[in-house]
Length: 245
Image 1 (cartoon, rainbow, N blue to C red):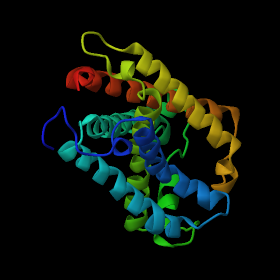
Image 2: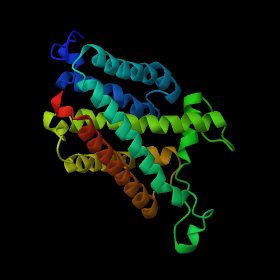
Image 3: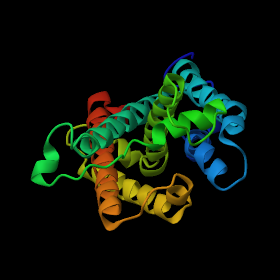
């Protein structure tokens, strides 16, 4: 880049409306990978290698290109969205740990139900690796691939949030004060994700029982994801002083 004031990239490859659409579409391929399988459009393994991997490389390659030749707003938005999404995913999983290990930790004695909330992760990995969906014992590779895919969803949801809720300039104006509206929008997005999953074949596809208890806990978990995402995003936007870019 010749100077920060004179980016050499075309506008559609920067943090403009067109650039944000491109970023959103590329990031969305992570969750579309699973949706394509559930709706019978393409098997997850084929989608993963033919679409998700190249799209992810293009997304972060575009971010690096903007850092080198653009005004760096797209670069920072993608980076902040990624970190915030991972933070939200970590909060989401930590919230669910007491339910997953209720019996082992003795929490069932105080009424915390034992629930296998992580059962879908090795199944994600099995589909990516081309293995049978239902197995008696999943391989280590299936667990690793499944958990990696789970966190890729978290990271890309964060990038999608940046493209949607942070598209306007004021969304990056958290220079002198903490932006609580970012947290509110992230919670709304997280609730929307949960509602979309409930309306999709997700539960039947993975043989999950949609009991009131399950729905309540998963909904609260997604709200926790939204809070974690929003808090991390707002804190980073303030730290990086994006309004000045």
